[in-house]
Length: 391
Length: 209
Image 1 (cartoon, rainbow over the protein chains, first blue to last red):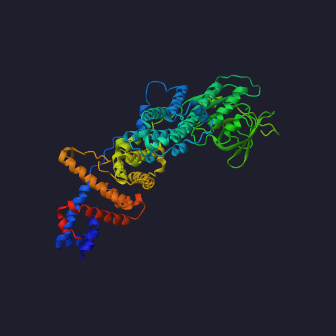
Image 2: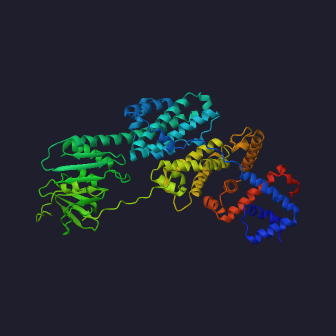
Image 3: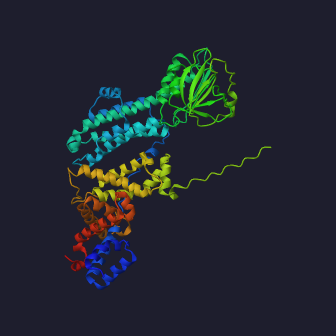
């Protein structure tokens, strides 16, 4: 037998049908004998059934990210960098009364990480305005600035068309929100008005970050394109075939020419920017045929420094020559290059801690596929090692 | 003689609408924005309702709801597909709501206000009748007032269990306490609710002091 107090304590679990059989029987028995508790439990059931039946609050807000992404699918080409810069500058002007000079100065600063910047923007839930419309506008500006900040990091990293369009739209949205906000009298902006300069400064940083990332990416693509078109003489070099595949850009950049001088410098700069551990496929294939014109500090060493290297073709030095058609052998790092000297060779540390010395090589960096039949056929046979020269 | 190669069979991925939440999350992690939107459609109202009840303000709730889904989108790999998605999503929303209240509380108190800062939309035809709508609004207001009067711990358990219909075990996982604790908190919250609704209940004369 249970008391009224026990019954009151049990009614929540009874309502949720969480009582075990014995407890439920005791509870029901008590209600059958106690009209007061029975009435109370009837009310209890009525109340919480009604509470449970309350409708969910309709959420008509658009999906915060993919909705935006869909809007990017538009026929016209994305705006040029110049237009984007102009838009960013205009936005800054509208927002904080900061002129283009300040924007330029901000852009020259070392850009901070986009995520940090985005997090640094005043949290929208901390913005309290006396006016509903002003509050909405202010929060939109802040929200969009934060969104842009996140894109500032993810956009350049992934560098795909969709993401870059998102960045563009995010900028447009921010600009529009800022304009709308600028149209609201300052007295209606309340405390947010005084936070403007701070927010404007943060937006300045975010825009600089976005700009920096986009410019780096564009510059890299441009340089690789340029390099691919440059044909220069190089006696020692044979032929460098570079298939750079920018991360997710689905844009193969092919360098099918000997490279030297300016082109090499451009390539160095471009490759350095592509050298990212966290960008899958940042540079997928590097193939060098013939004697590789690489010396210490050359693009090749920069290129393969952090990347896995696969050697195709016959490799001397281990006593175990690899046939051309074998799957790529993954090696950890290229240690050094001595390729300007006669009897060119490359020393590579392999995974087993051994050392390989290679004359004419095929290198593939982070290979994502096996060579095609055509590529395999183009591999040149490697001459027999010369005694004393490491090959 | 070369053997003819049989074409490899590749299973078609399940349509988004039929895929489980967990499968959708895996696809979100692979960059499938359609999967993300499907999840959003499934949970947007539940999350908004939860956050709205929790923080007591529609505008902030919308922001927090948006932030919840943005976090999902930005970092889908934070979700372990072996766990239940809804539990994880409510956990994210709850943490955001807690952070929000922590920041807001010293400055202002959460109050629905006389004119109702929150807006409750009618759910269906019945609620669209003026009388029902009025009663529904009144109930909504009373419920929100009572929620605001509860402590955070009681409120979150009450919203998740008694309003969102989550199991004790799911709520225990979200708030990080044993299911037994969830049960006792829910009982206390309901008791306080019931007391505050005494004047509205027909059996009030039967209630013990």
